[in-house]
Length: 127
Image (tube, rainbow, N blue to C red; front, side, top):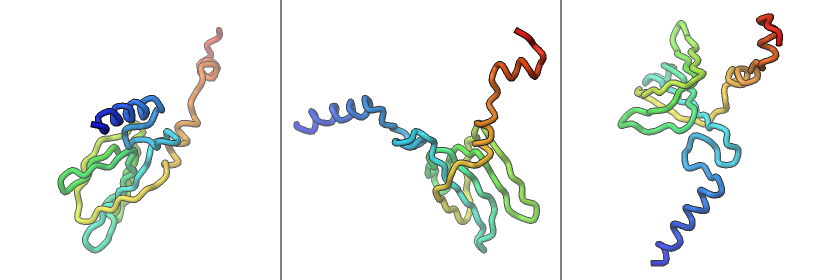
């Protein structure tokens, strides 16, 4: 009986304080959490390195997440960037998930935001 009274009050306090319910961002900084998902073969050679934004979910024997970057292994490695994110399901023989930081190229995209006055100067439009 006592739990019925306390639980709604606790939920209301969490919502009122702005606590994040999802694991996509940190509760304290409100910045997205990034994780590296490394897929290797049985000999330990790299198949692919993924950078996931937000939570990585177990999906049967695979993992599901929102990818922002992928680096493939092999003799001709390829780096793919997904600025808007890409929902993927990854399966492989060996999968390791470790915390990582935000990729540098995402910081560069955020710092290159163009203002309206800069756009007018570039296109030659005058006010």
